[in-house]
Image (cartoon, rainbow, N blue to C red):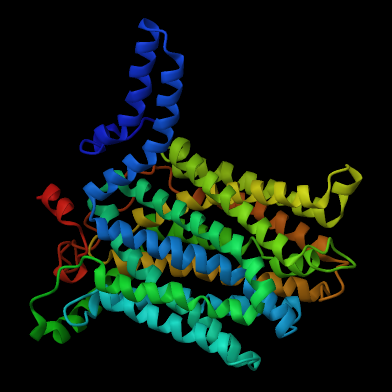
Length: 517
């Protein structure tokens, strides 16, 4: 594929600065032999390139928008999500003492707030508060997260239903913040198409960096504070979302007297627009693929986690080492983002997802090798093998996930991009919920419990077969590249009264507006 040269007129000089520096250094080396200087220049350019990249994004987009991405994806989703994942596993296992198959069902319920993303998207798009469409919802997300974290952390052992409600409240805070920043990302991806992949790369990198921090500290804090105390600490990232609500840039609507009437009208238009868009074959086919690719890859995570920490049947990994495993996996995810950003973001969607899905199915066989302890037969220690397996699987998972996110932004009609992107993410959350519940049912049917892991290998084999079976659905993915228009530009404006520049849907930087004008 050819690079997007025709769409990078303004940012290309910034992007190429780091690439020009080594070439100048090489010319100097051919005329004047100064290898030490050249080496220092090359090393310096490696560190300067990310800084220049962020400067370019900040100049093309609003700096407070970039700050919002870093805070929501890095601290809220990345750190809180990873920390939450490890700590709640220990919470259900050691505090509530729940069977792994039931934990899978509980974790599936965590996705309810994510399934409701279209609802949050509708609120942010058509129900402004005091003239603002985005800022109040960041504040609401932070307040909900703070309250839920403090309840589960400070009130002692709770009944399962109450504890589950608090944990769902924590995920709801993350989901509301996510859909609000995603509305901003979708809008900017439409206005500045050449930077769509860069924005998703920034999201992926921040998420992986935050996950690295969360996984690195989770085992240590669980060991010293206990699962409940560690969950209480998550009130801090939630409180920072409140701060973001006050600092992120958003132009205030001046027509406050007609907000309620306009909200009802916008809601009706948005619902009609969503219905019209989802009926378009260019939209529902890739959406169906994304759902099935997630749902068919059933999750066996809780069975594997209980086996990892079992002192008799499993390798009996400590709490600290479990955190280390996930931390290294987060680094691998960052490597996957870099691989995608540097080498894969210009490939067609179908080709990229085809090979990514093949690798995804094959990498799952490493779990099978580990559960059957074939690694010991090969002379590979458990500690080394599990780290290797996590690195491989997370790199491939990230490479597989990134183009699906970019594809989702390409399917959003201009005018209801926040709501429709939320709908697509809702479909993905439904896929994840189906994966968790499907895995829980399989674990229950195979009688995988807190102490009996005899059939765990069979559950993993079934999962891997289903991953490879997804290849038969690849025809649903469009052949277009990651910068092309996938849906008709008049998909909404042809029959519906939706204006792309509706003031109720704006959160675009001043620089972008001026560039468009």
